Image 1 (cartoon, helix red, strand yellow):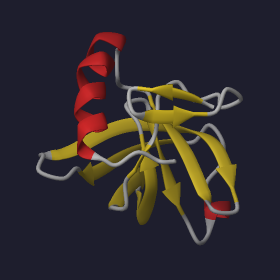
Image 2: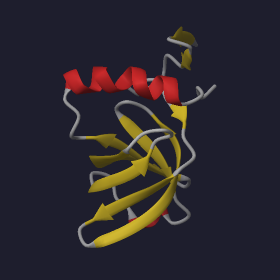
Image 3: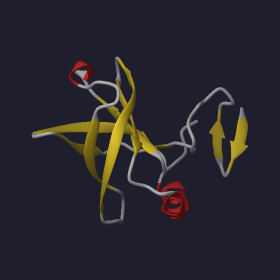
Length: 116
């Protein structure tokens, strides 16, 4: 394990950014379908969404996510499912360019407690 800006990351972890707990509802739009699912954790590059029926999602599905950060305006992102397990789906944001990602990263890290 290594420490990065108050966050612990496993060296085998393939994620690009530290995650923080985020227990909020996320609206997911895929095509003409709307799903509401609880999230588990978030980073500046993606989010993990819990689902009681992850079989309705497929790796590489694209979707639009909307969620509310504490003390902030609603966030709307376009994402793609990059990971799926029995607990839910891992989504990476497709609409964040590197300059914006670096601008968003400090804000996310200060809003949430770290995942340990």
